[in-house]
Structure formats: structure tokens, C-alpha cells
Length: 247
Length: 221
Image 1: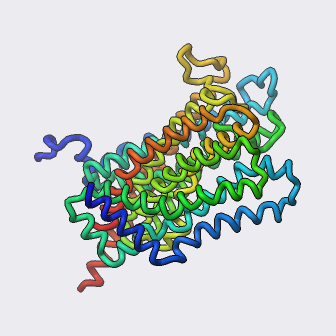
Image 2: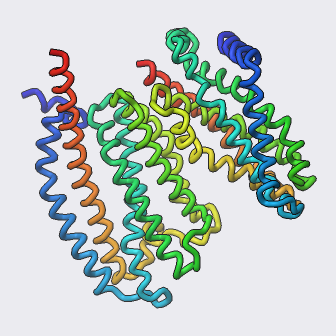
Image 3: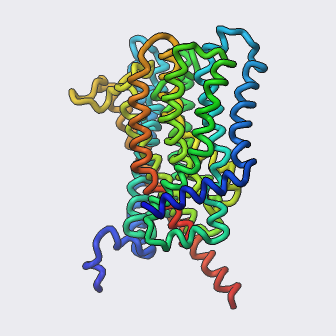
């Protein structure tokens, strides 16, 4: 076996090697998703204190914040994979971008909808044109644009590559979302989870929030592996079809 | 550099000879802007408040009109293949195309905009800021649009897709440009907004051609 000499990044470009790795990760990530989300939802709904100002509506946070974090995290992962796909022509990287995009779009949508439901009782409006909200909305359109673009090519490989270039250009939106609450004086509250002086949330709320974030991540890993495997299968079916048509 | 200049001149003369290509974006810009007083009513104070945003939104849509043709003709007749093979870097060819697009859409928009400003009752202090914001903003729109045109080359239903991809990327330019014009209209300094707009312009011209050229290479592969 010479696989030991192949750099780690390229070893899993081989669909068979990826399949073995995926098969090993899958049961763990699926189990983690169920346990973390069950615990997280229990703590979030039943065993965490209501906010002293917001009352029970603060519990929307346990969905809104993880969805928001994932919407950015997924795009960041897609951008890294897109770069790997363009630089090293990594075969699976472009497919990962395609597999992750609908998930990212849905996390963004959940974030926007949950935020809107939270905004109505707290701010008195479903929507305000604030920098954080606007940049998150732009992120949603970037996801949709990517999905539409990849879909619009007859040659799937060309669509994947065009999409990857688009993802890399759209990456400018990520820092804008992150720092929008610092750069502009917004209605949306500034960061309270990851700050230089440590988290500003009390432990009783921090625990369910962390569980939910980890649960969302485990969910993403599980579903993205599923989607990648089905993409690989679809590609193999396509190859067989063309081979059959050629005969 | 010489080759890029020649490509630029070639594109311009093609556009000039095909007169309707040149007239359509401007006619759209004027007509779309004139729909607004007809739609919201001719109340002067309201129009003054709406003018910066409305002029900018219609200008932005007008630059969108000619975008899908930026590379399409060259792609279909094989000129683009030759451009990719030529010693001229494809990035420079993109810049030449962007310059030609700007001269045939952005520049006419700049020339007509003050007239529309008068009809939309733009505040007298806003005119200079409007012109500077258009001078900085429309080239940035053209270069981002070139990226959109390149990345949708060879795609089905390219035109509508192009708008969907490019409009989200246009948002920052629209925000800073209209803030500048509004600030000037209210007697504040438009300078901070214009400086940010200038930063977008410079970064766009410097970086986006690389992405556009990469997309073109992908389309030609």
C-alpha cells in the first residue's frame, strides 16, 4: 500500500476512502445529534430560567443563535472547500460545497424566521433594516444564487466550478455579518458569546445554548455526509448511463 | 497594455455602431425613474426624500441590462477562445471589457442623472455628491457585473440568473452611494460615505477581474 505517502487532503479525494471514513463517522455523528438536541431542547424549554426582561420568549435564542452560527460556519466551510477545489482540483471538495449549500440556506432561513418571531415581541417589528439583518439576508441570497447557478449548467462539473468561484467571491459577506453589530449602531445586540472578556451569558443559559450549537453541528455533519454519499452515487449512476448509451 | 486598449476601442465601436444597444439602458434609466413620481404622487418633499435612492436604484438596474451580452457574443463566435489564448492576460481583457461597458452605460447614466435629479427635486446640495457617487459606484457595478456575466456564461436562463447573483453583491455600493447623496442633501458631509465607496471601487477593480477571468476559463474549458 502506498496510500500512506499521499497527503491527508488528497487521500480522501478517493470516493472509496471517503466512503470508509464516512461510514466510521456517521453512526457517531447521528447519535450525537439525537442526544445533544434532545438534551439541549429539554434544558432550553424546561430547565433554564426565563430572562428577567424578556421572560419566556428568550427561549427562541436556543434556536436562533445556533442557526445563525451554523449559517456562517457552513458558508465558511463551503468557501474553504471551494478554494481547495479550485487550487488542488480536489474531486470531493466541489461536491461538498454543493452538498452543504441547501443546508446552509435552511439554517439561514431558520435564523431569519426565528429572529423575526423574536423581534416582534421584543422590538415590536417583524423586520428592521438593520445591518446584521440585512447582511444575513444577503447571505441567504448568496446561498440561493449558488444553488441556482450550479443547477443551470448542463455539464455538472462546469456548474460546480462556477459555483465554487461564486462562493469565494461571496465570502466578503461573512466579516460584514460578524462585525455589523460593532461597525454600525444597530438594534441587534452585539456579540455576547465569543468576546475578549469571555462569554457574557449566565451558566444556566450557556449550557443549553452550547448543547444546541453542538447538536446543530452534529446534525450538519450527519446530513452533509448523507448528501455527499448520495451525490457520489448519483454521479456513478450517471457514468453508467453514459457508458450504457455509448454501447 | 496596447492590446487591452485595442480591445476596448473595438468593443466601443461595436456598441456605437449598434445604436440601440447604447440607447436602451439610458431610455430605461430615464423611463423607470419617471415612473416613480407617477406612482407615488408629485409631492415635492416626498420626492426630495426619495430622489437619491430612486435615481441610484434605477441606475443600478440600467447597468444590469447590457450585462448578459458582455461576453456572450464573443463566447458564441469563438472570439473568447482566441482572447484566452492570446498573450494578453485574460484579467486585462476583462478590465477592457468592463471599461467598454462603463463607457456605454455608466457614463451616459452620469450625464443624464443631473437632469433626472432636477425632475425628482433632488436637493441642490446633493448634485455634486450624486455625480461623485455615480463616478465611483458605476465602475464598481460594471466590474461586479462582469464577474456575474462570466460566471453565468454557458448556463441556461443566464439573464435572470445573472440578476439574482449580482444584485446581492450590489447592495453595499447602493447603501453607501445613497447615504452619501442623502447626507449631502441634508447639509452633512458626504465624505465618509464617498471614501467607503472609493474603497469598494478600488478593491473591486483590483480583485474582481481575477475571479471573472477564472470564471471565463472555466466556461472555456
